[in-house]
Image (tube, rainbow over all chains, first blue to last red; front, side):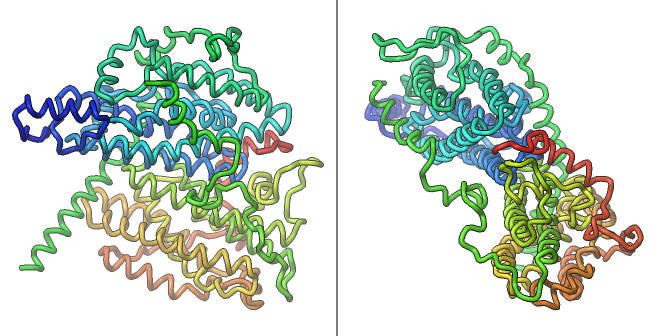
Length: 323
Length: 311
């Protein structure tokens, strides 16, 4: 972080005002005083979200060139373009905390900031485009809808727009799978295989179990995060099972069954060692995703330099003419 | 956080999951409807359906192949804004291609490749995914492989200057579908041309490296430019019938626009002869570069593996 706005009030009074704002459930705005830890937590979370949108363009982008109908090609291209747009709003929200997009990009490329581990899984068939929409975007929405009421104003407002678009993407993904299951046997098998592959990684998108989630408690106290990992994971499972039934696919969990007493579905334990490995950098696509992003950034360096040089020259010429 | 609050938060988001909802704010052509629903698709008097279809394929294949190449840039552009702009351009051209291919299929069902009986594949997709390279009617400028960012800027400039001039005149077509596609397309291609023109100037006057790369791209692509403004006999005859536009008739206008961009950028017009055809045959006749069949192999692979597939 390069610029931290100067503290406008004595910390004690400012801290009280901040605490009161959080307690009332009101928003903190960019010019308000905020504790450094709050600022750092937000930068970490918003940046990670922005990076996820940008890296998330790759697994689906992998199929734009091979989309099997022109309508599907248009839907997919528009979706991946929306992800770039989400990245833009989130980087902008992050900039209100005093970090530039260039610095954030650098932190992504150097591996100091992370992105969602789900994007370190490969897309191996066209059904994955639908499954990502249904399960991955579905899980993301469960995580993100509560963030529309997050305590930091610019983040919450960006999330409102993003959630609307994500829910449209989820509907399109589900609709693709529904259409494919009404097609040939080969297409139905493709859908089932894809769901088998993405089910557990989707459950892992909510993060480790609450007992092992180190940053959760503080984020919840600050109103940055509003629901625990396990609460959201349960919500996602409860919501998804009936959708899977409607689709006619099986979710690959022998322990999945309705629990009358709890009023929720019971489900099995995801493989947390796999999640740890993927986070550690050993996932199926970690290196590929980063290499792709670095190559795009490096290949574009001369263009960004040219644009800067051109803008400077134009500005100098304008000053010259004004004299 | 109470469960009720969570439920109310998530409620509305999932209501529309299996259908319904307003999708009008989304990119054109991504909806769930027939792109030509409600448009009069009667073939105008004095034109053979097969000729109209072939003409639609020329304009439609230009857009489709160009869109495919542009979409290869997705997630690879120098900056997020340029990634979005290139995807947007690819989407616009894809939308134009869909209407034109659908028009071709309606004007001449015989032009649509035969698929297994009962296949649900619509005409536009049968044309896009089940034709061989030699049946594509696009200019070769659209199909050559991508290079660096200067290459995409130059290609889009040469392509959109000529396509815009053509579409502006095609608004007056006696074919209602072509006139409608042209009116919508002209607005889109105006934006594409302006984007490419702005970047052409920026790269020409940016750094030594950007200028060197721009000149190299211009030199490589210039021989492919004249095909955009050279008439195929079919284009000439459809222009005479008031349905199409003779691309040779817009050559002067295209030259003038390009000269203006070159002059502002301080770049000389390349001294390069047009790329020859084979026995006088070029892209419009189905005579392509080696790159097209390779591009189509990727584009068509999933569709061809499932000729009875429903997408």
